[in-house]
Amino acid sequence: MQPWQIIAIGAVVVIVAAAVAYLIYQRSRTQHLKDHFGPEYDRKVTEFGSRSRAESELARAEARVNNVKIRALSPSDRTRFLDEWRLCQARFVDDPAGAVNEADRILTDIMHARGYAVDDPYNRTTDVAAAYPDHASAYREANDIVVRHRRGHSSTEDLRKAFINFRALFDEILGGADEKLRRVS
Image 1 (cartoon, rainbow, N blue to C red):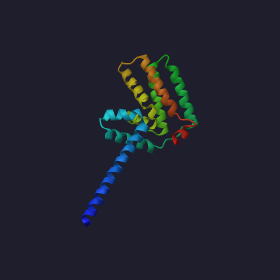
Image 2: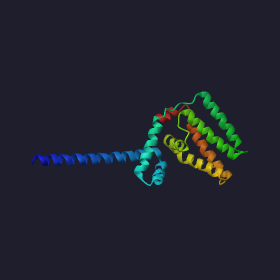
Image 3: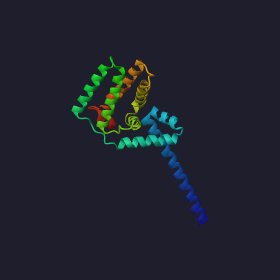
Image 4: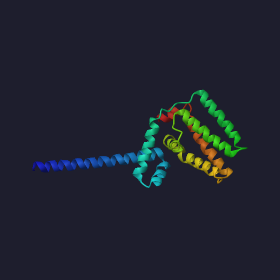
């Protein structure tokens, strides 16, 4: 065999190995993102119309949240937020719209206290999707209801649904004694 033939065969082997490694990486990345984000993965693929663009966005969101220095709430902050929530919940009977707006504000305050970016609603929703993927669609639905209500297109039942969705995230994001165990496992 000529030296150039050996070099050509070696180059082909390296190219094939690199292609196989890239495909394995892509499949692994896709599976990780599907596992982590659940239904949010499919929603992003539909939104972007491209799996690779959606995966890039999801990976960026996950990396951003992983780089956030999540702070545990102090016992006094937890108590204050719990008290605010109880008052907000009691307010729902007489003022559903006001209670839903207050619930959204409380969640935003908790996220801010924990270290998340909350100034931009898009970043807030993206952070919720990355950090609490099980609550992403419910949080997005609750925000959509709030927007529809401001335009006069939602019912009291819609507001009740938004409040329940906010409550589920509130319970999760408030954290507790077992939060560190959930994040580690």
